Length: 212
Image (tube, rainbow, N blue to C red; front, side):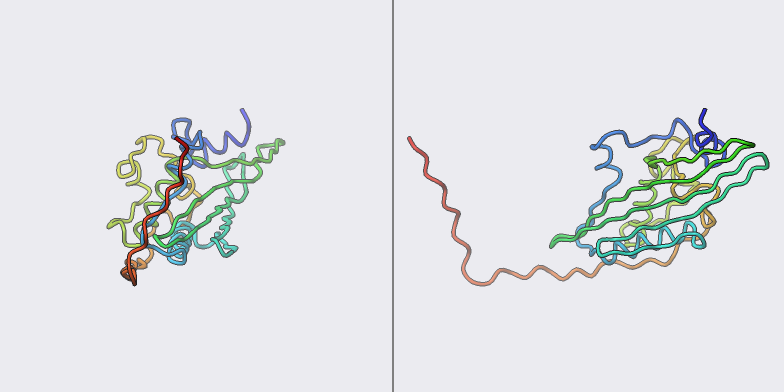
């Protein structure tokens, strides 16, 4: 068994039973979200607050026009073994007249050491639980969900396996804020009503003629 797998199983809390994204259809369902009536700026602010709450000391942000990269350094020591690395959240948003949307990707890179053995690892973190908890907390920040879902509550509230929810993205042993209270909400979006069209109604489209 690879040393990185040993660390993820024993130290980071991962489990083979955790549901994972295994297809593009799964990714569209679990790793993307749409918020009608929201703005890109508010969605980015909500996501930033969620990740800062999970580990405020070790999470650093690199911002861009469409979102951010959030990098969280971690270190684990277990007497005969240790692991260190970085979790990177790539958060991308879009906005149109109807609202805002976002997608997220989580990559873990690091090195595991046990005795004389050392191994570098890179893992695409695709646990369904991490995605669902992330979006649920963003919904709370945006005022679209009444409750902040804690790590302990997530399996029951987010339809996850009770023994293996796969919440390592926000709830591993290295997340210093995993049991802390939620950050202040951003409040509900103030969306101006759509203006009524001015002038006469648009003419119907002209249909192309077809040969008989």
